[in-house]
Image (cartoon, rainbow, N blue to C red; front, side):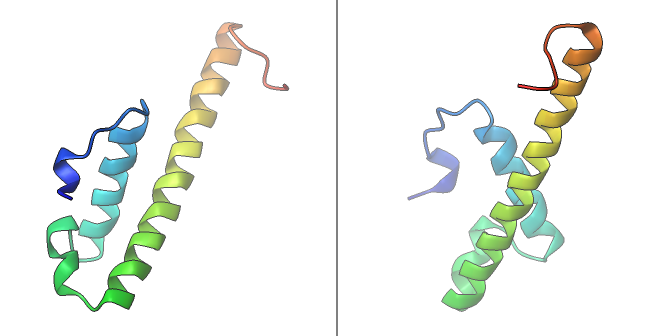
Length: 78
């Protein structure tokens, strides 16, 4: 399946995909060139990229919550 044509329903999915692309580029590869790597190496890179994207998404969400709390829109403690 072509990753550029995958339907994305989660609002954060485009950002997540961009973060994964950023990680892969920083490591000298891309979605398009992953197939040329040994399977174990490609899988390891994708796992690392996923962890990187998840941590960055959590950072973005935390910052958004913090800014909302400053404006008085939400409580920081659930």
